[in-house]
Length: 431
Image (cartoon, rainbow, N blue to C red; front, side, top):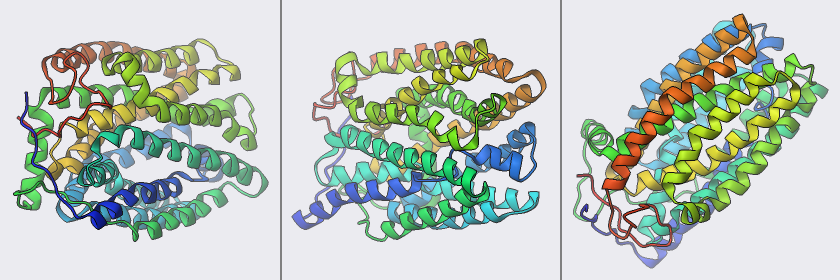
């Protein structure tokens, strides 16, 4: 059993301000995800800018490589200088990058803006979960994190649904580049919202702020020395990474079956609606079936989606996508809660960024592989490749995580199922 972390004490006024961070973050996240480019970005690159499918995969490669390189450094920025700073600058830089991406007329400018976009993304990935968890923890409500983070994921899905519907209609009625540029303006609103955030305490009582390099070093120690943290990060990075890689095939799939741009968003909406329900009910589902069973479903659902799309070369096969979106919504909530309980506040954003780094590594490699196979051998073969990858990697990684999960019990947790949202455990220090 791990020792509990020292309490963080704040005044009543500070506690109210920190709790207000939650609904302000919902507003921030809504505009971050209310992006009109969502349903048309791949066809924007192929039909408006003249790229082939394999070129999009190669084009996406540097994006994910930069995510890999910057995830940990930017996570350490959030731990060293503040979550509010990281979220605000991420939204501002993203605003500029998206607008330039929509106006770019040559490959060089497209690529440059896309890389800046990647840098911006790393500033608020990891910092977002840490910001909400630390705000709740300082206010004495960390046990509400899984439920409230589920609401945040639902808010994201609402923003995405609006972006899917409006973006696809704008693309058909006006032009493919207009939704992209307009998305930059929506991201700018998120940046303005970030000014209202109150920075939560990042250190437990009696702890001193460490330097940038020390924060980074300690984060890697927490991530890789603690077996449950290490194995869950690897499992989710691989399975989710392969699942997300299949998203790049969605728009080419619809185009190959002669679906109009204006309908793209409506094909993508069912998955987002399911993700709202999944995110809101994730904490109840964990109580009902246990975290290990929920995580076991993740590779099975992703593999089923890939195999279904590979076996049925018809537009109706798009119905295999929504179950994966549903599982992602639940898994992100559960994984965030599971990891946050095992990560000290001083390195929380950096450790979560290491998770995102691993995820980006898998997506960067798998996207290039799947788009190349899709171009040369057809989309069904690309989907079958994804199914095989999940099968050969997901099972052994799940078995390794489950072994470590059953060995570890945190204060206040059920030894059989470590994540119990209604219990009142104290956050633990790393071993």
